[in-house]
Image (cartoon, rainbow, N blue to C red; front, top):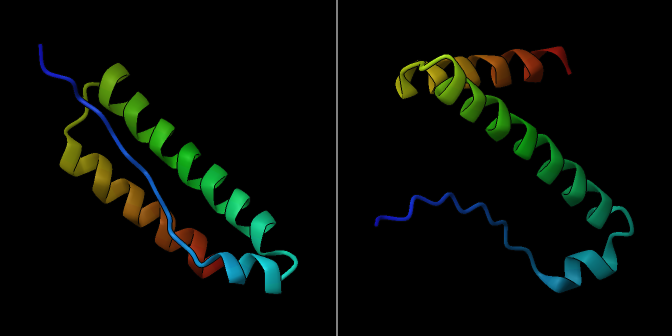
Length: 70
């Protein structure tokens, strides 16, 4: 049986977390927001049987709109 997995990792220097007090909090928020986006994408894939290319296009569009609002 074939295992299908998704890995998400971010690497940063330990010294960055030591020097910048809010860096760990920032990384946690980034992880949460990315996890929420991935969950949204998988739900569309499984529940709506949407094509992966359309999901990615919608996700990129959504991220761009969020960036322009900030």
